[in-house]
Amino acid sequence: MGDMNAGLAALKDIHLPAPAPWWDLGLGWWLLLALLVVFVFVFVVWLLPKILAWKRTKKTQLVLTSSITEHLKHIQQSYAEDGDVQACLQATSAFLRRVALTLFAQQHTAGLIGQDWLSFLDQQWLNDKPQPCFSSPEIAALLNESIYKPPTSQDMNHDVQVLLDLSQQWVTQVLKQHV
Image (cartoon, rainbow, N blue to C red; front, top):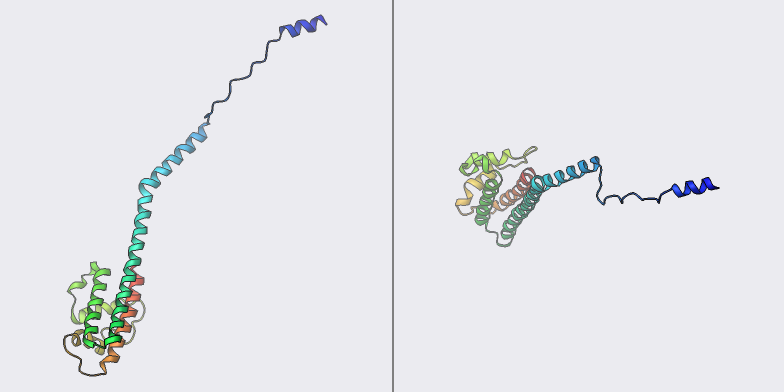
């Protein structure tokens, strides 16, 4: 028993290790954290402005589409209310020109007149162009000549309605292509 007391007397008190540091991360965690910081930096500096610009563009396109379709509806409604053929033809011609200038600015549509203008409008159809098309004789006569002179017959009402329907189809198609 004496040996046992001697052995116990030789023991020293237990010393606990120092507490672990609060932020003692291994190398892998530091690399992951650095990669996360780089990702956030790239997102904020490069990707976020592109996303915001894309959203602004989409909003602008939506406003443009809405504005164009509302303007054409206004022309159709004005024609339905007052039946003024010449005013409707002038408004439709100006409307088609404005839409083309807005959507096809690079293609120099401003200088196109007469048959070249009507051919340009017809070239924008994705599929087969409808009949009658803009360069067909009755529609071409409306857009090239009738906007400058008073209506000569009641038969023009049918042709004007065909022009309005054709314009609606053309605008719908062109907006799908470009907006």
